[in-house]
Amino acid sequence: MQPFNYHYFIGYVSQVTPQYIKIHFPSSTLLSKFIFSGEEFNGGLVGTYISIEGENYGFIGQLQEIEVLEKERLSLSETAFKNQEFHPTAKAEILLSFNLFDMKKVTKGANVYPTIGAKVFVCTKEFVQQYVQGFGKKKKEELLINIGYLNSDNQTEVTVSQQSFFGRHCAVVGTTGGGKSWSLSKLIEEARKNNTKCILLDPTGEYSSYPGEHCILSDNSYFSYRKLAISDLFFLLKPSERAQAPKLLEAIKTLKTLEIARRQGELDCYFANGEAKNYLLKAGKNKREFVEMQRKYYEEIDSNELNFDIKYLPRQIQGECVWEVDNRNPNLWGGKSETDSANCISLVTRTNAFVNDKNYKSILGIGDMNGKKDLAEAITRFLSVANNETLLRIGFEKVGYDFNVREIIANALAKYLLNLAREKMFKENPTIFFLDEAHQFLNKRVTDDSFTSYSLNAFDQIAKECRKYGLFLCIATQMPRDIPVGTLSQMGTFLVHRLINYNDKEAIKQSCATANSSILAYLPILGEGEAILTGVDFPMPLLLKVNPPVNKPDSATPQFKL
Ligand SMILES: Nc1ncnc2c1ncn2[C@@H]1O[C@H](COP(=O)(O)OP(=O)(O)O)[C@@H](O)[C@H]1O
Ligand SMILES: [Mg+2]
Image (cartoon, rainbow, N blue to C red; front, side, top):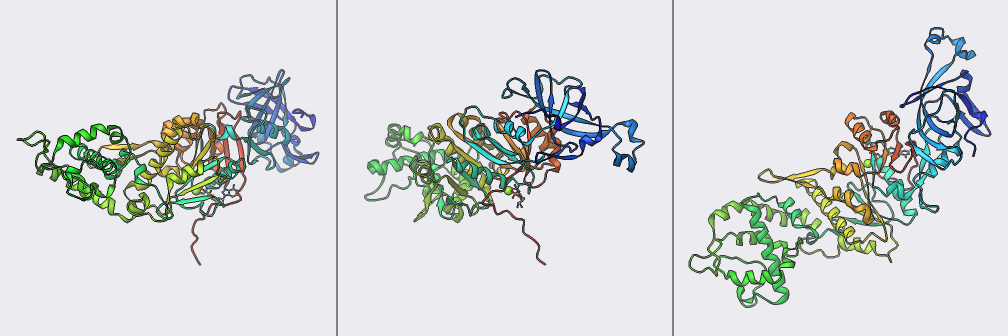
């Protein structure tokens, strides 16, 4: 592997600055296309990779601008071009430097600089490929993923370490039609080849034809409300903070107590012979015994789970609207409180609408769920070591867009995975959680009646803590500026497709913090499937063309018919 071969010589370094170097070409012929040992070289194309021979260090860089000297510009004519009688110069960016005596020793950016007069060569395919393949590799034997080809020559394979690519979470960004979903599919395919388990949250059903297990919410599966946290129910029911939230909490506690009472055969005195212990109208009833029972089972009752029959929640909220104690007998609850009742009317109405809504019922498994899969169970089954399946698709295509339900369910699901991660479910068997169209789910807030808003931050938390638990996020989004800053800063790898919006470009620039960010100038002009790969573990950004996946997501824009 010889980085400097006089056959590939193109010019000399003529100026060195911290940001870029200038190259002088002794003759413009050196820039024209030539073929050497069967490989095609192109010295004059912007984007070409070059190597520079320093004293102790070698450098890899990329041509950025090529121009003709001012004094020659005036005399440019067609004959001059033909005879190639001009002496162009080029600006290039140093991407990395390597030790001449130990070429595997690479440093990112330029800590050392080439000297004036250093020779510049075009890089061979093998040379660049060898560097790229070592990207992120920490051990000798490592799982690799093949993403595509370098854009500069369309033949240098980009194969990188899977651990480095996914190990610090990864974001695929770009405007619609840039190729995010295709790239995500490619990444899923590559990870599956390595037997890595992938959970995919598919918001639109684009991936429904993929081989794997499919849990389509509200269709063949439900995500049991019992797996939600109390805060999720708050997001959904939006109680006002002062008047309604305490009653809602109290009602939840009561229903949980009743669930335990049914199981343990307790609290019979509250219910007439054989009467179902479904809900409790508290007015005038014995408070003491009930509170004692709650004390006994406080752990289960105060837990964050929704372990109760939610059908009875509206009636129970009404049942809670009583005076704290009876004036004459402190052991009893007082009578019905009209003020509380009036305050809770809107909450009861909303709760009623919620538990009877056809959509919610089938998404959250309220009522009879004959023959449908419980998503939480499906996830546990999927993750079990004995299971060979590598893809679990959670389809949201049947989930409506009303009442923030998508964000809330996605957030609850993320929280469920977060908890599994904290229980070390992924430690032995790291799993990648893919999320397409992440802007639909990230950075969302839900506002309640009194305009207090809650943020849905489960994905944020996964990004912040789950790396060490072996649950890795790979999100695709149109709008990087919509990713919470905290999440964005946790992303170690970026695959950036075409980006036009200034703020989006800035967001990416800020977070990939490489010495060499001028490659990002390409962002607005990238074609379909073209992308820039940058990452903490990758010594230099790469402009590449992503290989099309075998299974293609179905995202074609509907065509007007003739
Ligand atoms: N790697 C690729 N190679 C070839 N064509 C691609 C590639 N990626 C995307 N495309 C083309 O671009 C279109 C849009 O890609 P898609 O992934 O759906 O974009 P996005 O998810 O960013 O909106 C695809 O239908 C396909 O025709
Ligand atoms: Mg898409």
